[in-house]
Amino acid sequence: MKVINLFLMTTLLGGCLYAGDNNILAARGDLFSALNGYSIEFVDEEPKLAKTEYIEDNNFKLNESMTAFRGYTVLNSKKYRKDTYVENFLRPTQDVVLHSASVPVKFSSKEKYRVLGVSEIDGRDYRLVDSGLKGFVVLVDEEGNLFKKMGQIKGNYLVLMDTEYYIAPKGAKMSNALNTHSVQTKPTKGFDLKFDGVKMDRIWFTYLDYNNDEGNKGSFENISFPLNAGVIEINGLAFRVLKVDNDRLDYIILKNKR
Image 1 (tube, rainbow, N blue to C red):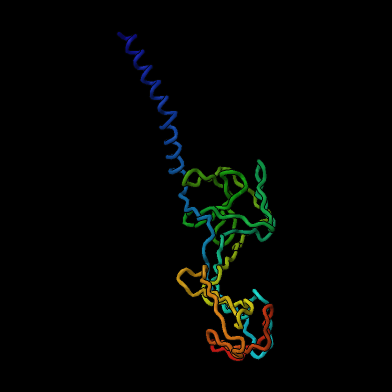
Image 2 (tube, one colour):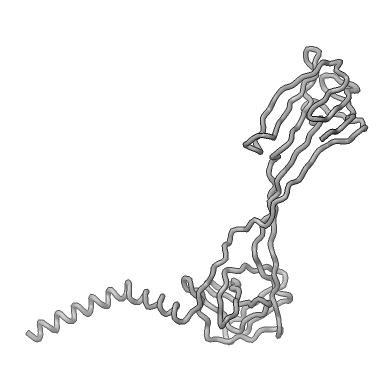
């Protein structure tokens, strides 16, 4: 009977160990990180919209002779939306090296380094900067000072390494270095009037209107005026036809009420 009980206990123990390989040890690792680490507030890697501005563009030149060839713009007035995005980076004010008994970690003052997240340690916020070593980060406080220890990201926690680094030069700092780029839309408002030649004793134009609900798609319309119209007025703008044929229009803008 004792031999049978011993066999059953051995079998159950083996089952527990097997289960431990799959669940218990992994959970134990997560628990270790939570107990010995600091929670991380990760930074969104997608660029953030910083500002939006509207830009107006037109070719209005009062009382100045102008020329438009067939297919080219005679008058235009367009409004664009310009979106500016920013990404959060840090840059050393000078070349920095973190020395230890192992491989040194270097940062160049000519490079920008991405901030992966923020952790609070002993009441101070530290930005976590990619060290170039997978899973390991350098800590930088709000004043730009580098922390003497590196950290390892484990899940949602930061675990500080035991090794202390010597930072050279002493007092080296990192400063904010925002990475910005702008995206300009197609016209969202306004119009574009293009010369389309002479047909049947009329001057023809292609009118593109951007003032619609779909913004940058616009709508086309073919319009015409008598060949001897002299002065043509569109959207508060008036221009005099000086000379015109099927390939070229010479004109002068007389007024602008826009």
